[in-house]
Structure formats: structure tokens, C-alpha cells
Length: 401
Image (cartoon, rainbow, N blue to C red):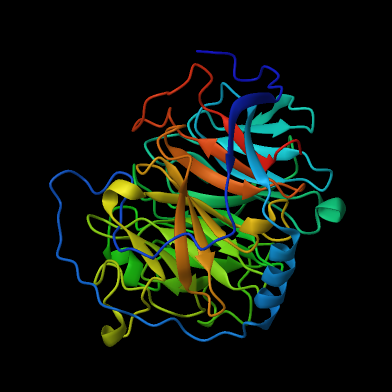
């Protein structure tokens, strides 16, 4: 096995691509999972047309006008870290250093601004199937409390812990259902200072509709693991339910939450998340649930084009023509999706980036300098390395920036 802790200095690639600020094409339907389902399992799906709900367009419109006035820039791709193994969760410290997990090894790694990668510690995960060392978040009050949050799989459950770097993790939420697939795992500090946790149904679809189960949900916690008093269900961490396997969380400038979600056989999704709402799994996959009281996704994909994992919305970023766009990493689809969001929060256009160029893409995050970082996942058991340097972190930024 290659040395995973060797320094990873930035390596510029020859390829440069230019993206215009025009709309990126009409929306399309479909989905995809990772893998789709346990072998031999199929189900009936439905879909129907849905209308996006109204939101105040003023803040985003003003931001887009400002970004467009700056004009498009050439976007350059460069490799900033190599020889990793299934990098999964990412978070940035106040000084700009990046923290990230490796799913299977359990290692928590730190990369400084020069590209030097060092191991901080190994998290106590069993690393099995799609479970392992997954999401990361940094406390909004890190400079005061020093806490980092992690989501990982044990022999008993998926759990959320908090820790100070190099110290023993302290569990703050246990008992999240686990399996070799559908473990969810994305966590993020929301704009309200609360901790949001994305879980999967752990292969049991009934978990998703059972509000007493932590599986198939988006959960909202206080930083100490307590339940916020303004959660939609009294004394419950459940924020939304009826999810199959959520691996991406992102907020826009209006603090609206979006989530990427694996479907089963027909439709992968991006959902606009509202507190207390039911997103339909397993009764509905993709669109077609509004008449049944479920919330429809704002966009879907066919199984060959997605398996959507990490998500990010570029805010005050370094690429003006992408300002305010939602980016979704595609595993089976082997591309980065750019979704243009309209004033009402619906998807008005889509574009494929890095298609079939770097293999499976696990995550996309906005770095402190406004660039986008994309991680490959070619050692995850479903893909094959496309480079001797896999897995990698790839930076998308203005040419020369």
C-alpha cells in the first residue's frame, strides 16, 4: 500500500476548462444508489410533475447580479493531495487547515496550506462496507471550545462524537442504525449553530417512516447532543424523515437546507429540506408523492448518472459564474453536477463537470479561499483507480489563482 501520510504538494494539471455563465440546460429525471440495493431487490416507483414552493428571491437575485457583473473566469483543475484511501468527510479549521477522514482506515488527517498531510489520530471505527469513518464538522466556536465532530460506525451502531484533536472521542448521539450499506454519515454545523446529521435507512426501509428510529432521517442537535426546543417534534432530534440514504447537506444564502439522497432503482434526488416534512421513502421514490402528502425532490437523475454523495453551494466563492450554484458529487455517475438554482429554490439548469475524467467522486466542499475541492473515491470497493495517485483531492479555481 502506498504511503498515505507522505506530503502531498500541489500538482498542476495541464487541463484547463472554461465554463460560461449561461444556464446549464434543462432539468431531467432519474436516480441512482451506491450500490442500488441488495442484489435481487426491486420495487415499483412513481413520479409526477411538482411545483417549487415560493421563497423570497431578493437576497439571491442581488448576489447573482453582483457575481455576474464580475464576469466568468477560466477554471483550472489541480491536484492538491494524492495517495489517499476513500477520503470521506471534510471540514476546515479557522486557520484554513483542512481536516478529513478516510472511511476504511479510520484515520483523521490534517492538511495545511502547503499541502502537507499528517495523521492526527485514528478513530475507533470498524470500517465495514459503506460504514466506517464518515462525516466531519468543526464547531462554530472552535477557537473557544476546540471541538470537532465526527460520525462513524462501530460494532453496535453509527454514532456522532465530539473530540478535541488527538483526544478520546466523546459520544453525543448513539444508536443510529448501521449496516454494510445505507449508513448516511454527512454531518454539518448549520447557520443556526446546530449540528445536522444525515442518516440512512441501514437497509430497513421501515426505519425511514418510523419517527422513533434515527435511521432514514436528517437530525438536528445542539452542539452537546441535546435536542433543540424548536425542533419540529417535541423531545426528538428528527428534523425531516422519509429519507433512504442522505450523504450531502448544503445551505444557500437564505439558510435554506438542501440534501442529496440515494434512491433505489429509479431516482436519485436532491431535496429542499423543511422541518418536520416527510420525503416519502419507501412509499415513493423520486417524484409523485405530493398527492400522498410527501415532499417531492427538486431534481432527480437516472441510475447511470448519479449516486449523489457530498454537496456544496458556492457562496462568496472565487468563481463568479458559479456563485450560488449547488454542486453534487456523483459516485456511479463519475462526474460533478452543477445545479443552477432559481429564485424560488428550484433547479433551472444542470451541467456535468469532470465527467468520466477522475473516476468516482465522493465529495465537494468550498475551501476558505472560495475554491471548490473535489475528492475521488476509487478505492471504495465499487470503482477502480484511474491514476497511480488515487485517491486524490482536486481543486477547482480561477486559472492562476
